[in-house]
Image 1 (spheres, rainbow, N blue to C red):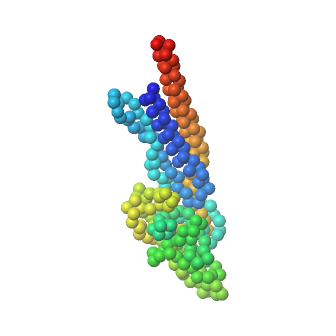
Image 2: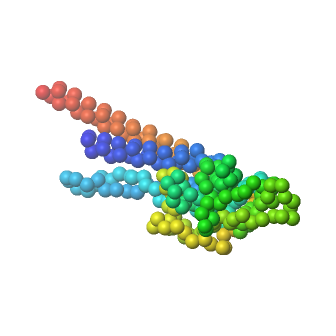
Image 3: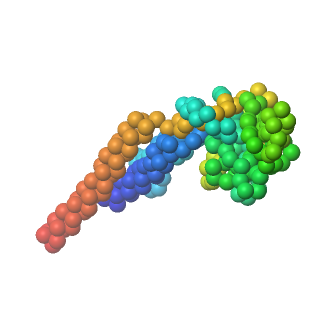
Length: 247
């Protein structure tokens, strides 16, 4: 009985972990530039005394979905979407270089170009800062141009270039803060082949129908594991009653 409870309990725990990952994807269906987490069940043998006849499934992360999300054209001058593969370089909360696909940018009160979450956007020479301006545009190559405050359109000036990188997808991992980094901890070099789509945003690449189906399937699987634990409890109770009767 204890073996049945152990296997059922382990299955229920791992199913809850899979539900957590699946629901995290569902919660980010509308998050700009979000990359869905991928997870899968793996079979693990139960070790211990006796024959190795028992196994249970363990949920584990197998990375993230590298497919692109749908483009949403906004017409806003500081909205950018990456065309194809690549990343925007930003400065994370701990000061390290990290990468994101979220291109809903704005200029904060200090003149820094930042993401919607307040992370400073990087160039090859540091954070991107912008002087007061009448108008601002971002080119397909990440070049940031402004018409300075009080000037005419003929005095347009380039104030920086966003660092765009494209490390191999298999070398990129997602951190606890939701940002991506190279697995070796080093900064990726700029890649001139990465281009932007100005006036657009990339949507989440989460497949809503798929995550909803997964949620239903995982919920049913969890119920089955709980029923198995209840069956084990009932079997143990029946055995105890038989022993008491025979004595």
